[in-house]
Image 1 (cartoon, helix red, strand yellow):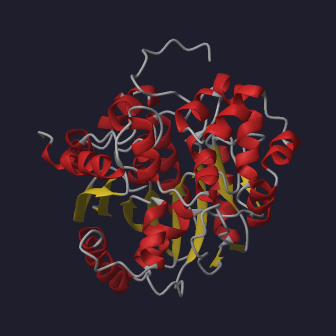
Image 2 (cartoon, helix red, strand yellow):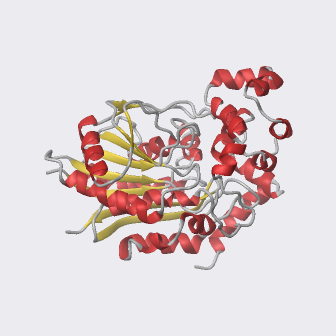
Image 3 (spheres, chains in turn purple, cyan):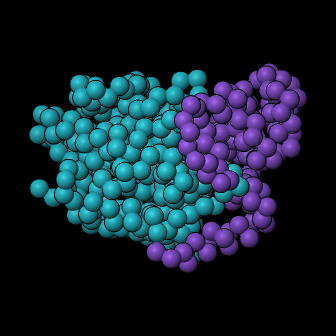
Amino acid sequence: MGQNHPEIPGTVIFDGEQAMKGYALNKMCFSFNDAANRAAFVADEDGYCAKYGLNAQQRAAIASRNVLALIAAGGNAYYLAKFAGIFGLDMQDIGAQQTGLTKAEFQARLLAANDQPV
Amino acid sequence: MARIIGAVTTSHVPAIGRAIARQLQQDPYWKPFFDGFNPVRQWLAEVKPDVVIVLYNDHGLNFFLDKMPTFAVGAAPSYSNADEGWGIPAVPTLPGDAALSWQLIESLVAEDFDLTTCQEMLVDHAFTLPMALLWPDQAWPVRTIPVCINTVQAPLPSAARCYRLGEAIGRAVAAWPGDEKVLVLGTGGLSHQLDGERAGFINKAFDLKFMDSLVDDPRWATQFSTHQLVEQTGTQGVELLMWLAARGALGERVRALHRNYHIPISNTASGLMLLEPVA
């Protein structure tokens, strides 16, 4: 915040502005460290989101299960990972979703990094 | 006098924990990563450190955005792991070393590092998985001291600042009258990005240059701002700050006893180095 850095394509820096915007969403995701809270979310998603005071954008992003939308709503990768955990998604599922690739394509892209010139 | 006998720097991604839980160490996908630790374990069996200072970043187990310390030092009699939301089995509780923790705290604050001190502290996968890689039976033969560096919320401490933190940790240990052999363990990186359209970003050339620099030109990476490090290494690649802090603790000259670099584990370029100070 207040820092003028050149933009990094495809990247949101989680700074003070994002931290303020995403506070409620990230607080809910932080609660998913606890298995009982994960179960409570699954049992009553609307009620659970309401308890944490998610705004309309955050509620829609949670409903969509779309990681880019969750980031746009202020979500932080480390807390969102706990949300993804509810659905048994790993980081390659998340990576594939954000890049519009299948998981196999995303895995192939990672492997291809071995061929980068050094 | 206590002394730092070496540093291990390694990646720490949660998928390592899943691989351990499923006993996939010799699976073709994981073997090149896990086998990289064999020489480190042999070295540990020879040198037998008493204490491990673990430089790592919490990922939302102990700290939330309500209170986000830049540098936090544990000063507890023991440290526990807990559920992080995805069901990796927790490791056994790790013994602490509160006396040496307070030596670090006294010494670092005297050198103008403003710390958060923690007499209760959960330690997450960035602490526990590297420990489990070094001691797979998880019957910890060492006491531990967590030093947590914020990489969750910008602004992050600069690379130069993290290097100086490491240097100050080195002086704090050297000033301790005990006869402990201390290992520094720096965890995180190397290049990876979990979030955004750039997810899956890896920068092999930068990683290899960075690993070389820790031996030959240890302050090389301190020329970069944390924003530049994110650009070069990814939003999570910036965890190399932990490697820089660990390197700083070793003094001016080191020798690399072992290194391994493997792409990928999960979405990450994994790196491993074993460095020993040279008097």
